[in-house]
Length: 339
Image (cartoon, helix red, strand yellow):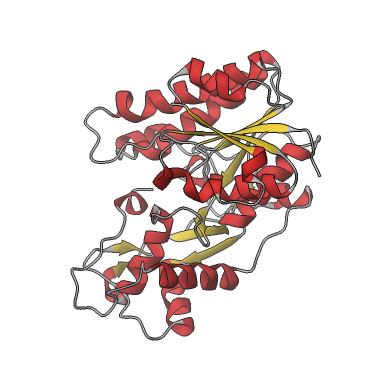
């Protein structure tokens, strides 16, 4: 138990961060959580967690507001930077709306962590900073932590989310090298699993779309998948393991969209589903490996268990209502056809 240790979690009300807060509280940590909005409908799921009444303090803090971030991080021994600025709607100025805030927000967190003399900062990056058309990476070679996505390729395709994640992770690691702050990063795959917050997130919408069907074309991409509860476990492991350094891929399972569709059909035959004809072929690069993280002692749930828990949660939450083919078709989240 980590009695007496206080850590900060940025973006605490989000999908992965909520599960991390739950895990930290269960292990005896006191948690400072930053949120953009303190209202009950945004934070009630955090306040209901075991030990939250005594060990969770929420701060209204925008990533771009250094003073607010510094106030939240003050008195903490560790920081988990989970928040990512993702503007809703179409981007009219990607540099201003996403890329700048991603790097500036991360830098604000790191500077505040330095000022507070924290022991370690764990930064959540993404698989999109690893797997997208890496330069000079041999065809068929397993992708590890030395592999970086090609920023210019992503820019040319206007894939701004990957550009932002690449830039923010690179800035975080460089800040650690320049200042001596202990910074490690985690690169999770597509995250599935039950939700703690009341609103559906993008990765759950991915599964919901496959189940309910719709008119959108979907690439037969090789997706790496990880359970949200295992992401939380990986983040805590990186904080608590002194020997952890640098990047850590968190992507234990990989499956194509067609294979995932067939798995879902075998487990839940009663849904309308998308048609296989709406899935178009694409080349599959070599997969990523989570060996570095596993060597630290990280373990993960079987993919089938994660799928089952996600679908069951979505069903009970009402996210699958109307899955009879008669309602207005749901849409495939555009982000996932652009990474």
